[in-house]
Length: 504
Image 1 (cartoon, helix red, strand yellow):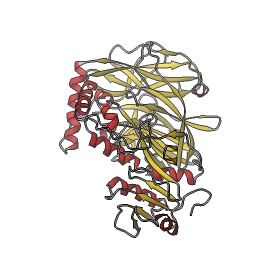
Image 2: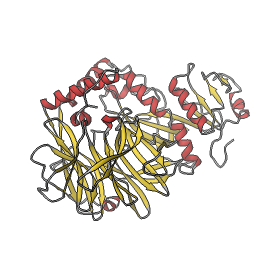
Image 3: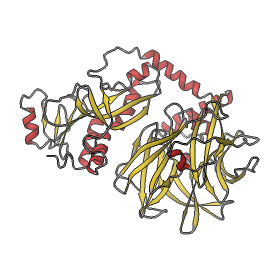
Image 4: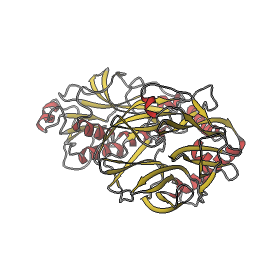
């Protein structure tokens, strides 16, 4: 039975046939030592009993088994008559029952709002986990597979938070819920075709990025201040983005070369007309020149997801040269990696090019910067288009850690969200969004912001303006075809930055 309101034994409710994602949800609960001790409906072959929904003594059987939580993954109207708390997945702002995605595709929406709810009644409950996940515009089946694979881990995540006292009983925002499944027969072939067309249209988007300076510390944004951004003029050719390496008046950036449509790392300054000097080039696209210091040495941790690894470079010397030093995570196409040392441990945050790189935040932990690195037991730790992908180094304010992240719900790099980290240990991670910075629709970069760097009395950002380009269309289509060939096992050419930023 539960101890201090924390469930110790769960039952999982599924349909008559156990689906793969439901089985993985049970495995995640089992890894926490919280069951499942029984299955309602179908279930895996094993030692846990499978109980019939129609059993008139079902409540008594659950009690005898020590069940004190029902995790309902069935998409059927909830069972609130069994004498135990019920956690259930709901979808959309209306809180409808699953399966997910049909309504959003029919409305041509980019995201599906997903929630794990602790039910108070059939019409109301409290949010335990929430995230916005991206639709696959041309396929309902692919959309559902993507979403269900993610939310399968949410019951175990919420239970870990509750055990740690981060999500006590009665916590969570109260939401109204649709009492019955959506029964409208959505005419999906037309929306799916429109989704494929939108993906094609997105390939024609060219993004022009530039660096901006806020003459105020990042902590001011936490207090609601929104100082103006002073935008630096763009370089004569290409553009600059990702100003995440700031040190001693030098700013390391991604520089985009329009000739080969590939990014490289460069150094520049914050004064208008500052020279842009290349410091690291590679046969593949490079971006995100993240800096970290350890043992008196300066290291660079760029994004090189095309290489399929997270690699550390050592300054030799800073800021003009960086030599390859160590591979931190092999076989992981890390996107926008960020490292921080906290209470005696190193933590590495990154999304994965192969796993919804705008929506799923992965976390690794190590005792030393060069590793060995191991996956955090709660990883992925965030599943949300609105707050997962890193937007800059973590910063500290009044003894708390804050993590800038990208809001990609409307578009890639649409805005910056600042999350307050309430728990960061080798076993636990928990954060909540506390502030955001949106682009100025009347300014020179009205279409997005995707970096925020605390630099003492200043805050460094970047912003974008979008435009249509036949050249971008050709390049992004080539990149998409290359990704398809790579997925099929055929050799592929490295994708340029335009593909990386607009064609997902």
